[in-house]
Length: 506
Ligand SMILES: [Zn+2]
Image (cartoon, rainbow, N blue to C red):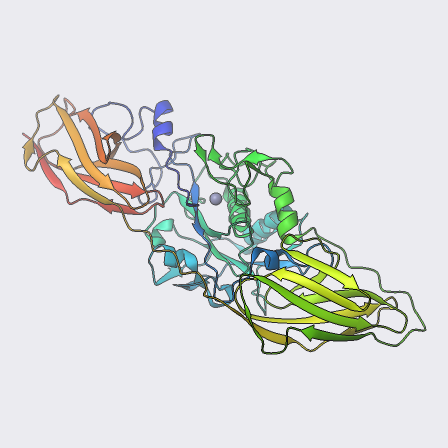
């Protein structure tokens, strides 16, 4: 499972015994920290973060017309087409389904069982937005990636929607600052990801610089990058730092040494810089125009096979045969693959693809996916004369993978205290609850609500599915009723809360 959500409360408690829910201090009195707390998130104590911002990746959903990894990588190095990333600032409605950036459709919503979501506009002034855009562009400067805030006229492009909200807009924990689909060693060409800026706007979260790191991190996921432990890498969860970038260094995957994740491309380590070069290519400057020549005759190029309208087995090796001649000589022959807007020369070494030339015949073998494909061949001679075939359309048979099941919310039931419990001052109160989840329980808390506010107590798992904590009623607690509820959070940040149990202090 490539889902990641980290709840750092336990670790934070060690150094912040005064923080609500930490240590064994009495329930009351309680002095709320100064400053406004986001809903569900304690305010950040001075110099510390009560909650570390985390993010989530969901397994990428590929639409019908599934490109194989070999197709995704074709054309890199020779005549690569720039990968475009659209930073969507204006807000809008997003719907569930296969990722389609042109339609604001996101597999993230499918994953969480939502049919639609309204993303508010980003909260930034024009100057702050320009700052953010500049920082993100700088992170991607080594790579053939164009970052724009104007919606491109044509697909494919990755979209990252940046909005002034918490992840609660998706029913998730408010310390989740971003979500993106992550492909298995492949770019999600039409990916739609999200950055939630409300927590990032709180003091201590780095302002525009912190938001730019988060945006770059989520784009990284859509371009196949897993989390890294290397603290100077943008794919790490390490605190914001001006030296963070996509580092040309190997790193173990996962957010910490105790939260190891599989690397998207396999192996024990990931090098984010090199993986991006593989996936999207290096930034290239325009080639110089060819020298003037007396040769004005174009090459002659023809697609031999497969035939127009052919239906061919998908998820297998497709053979494409092209003939090309020229009165002086064919200098280059490229296959244009419309699905990915890519061109592939015969000598491009790409895993899953072979190409051989025998005289005037070129033969590619491409490990393809499924769905419709359109392609053409482009021949060029040394004088720069270009000829191309008509676009050919074929069908690669085979079913698209089914969408993954939506993640279920955790279940949580109260065990202790019992209904109508009376508690004297100085008495110990025991909290116990049962919690389960289809993908794993990340956090269970007892929430104690009293007339002056509420306190949260992280609970430890004492046996499978059973969580417990205890504390002591303050000697100065006022008479009256209290309520106890239990909240379970799963590994993707979804929560469930029990009905309140009433407790009386006589
Ligand atoms: Zn992440």
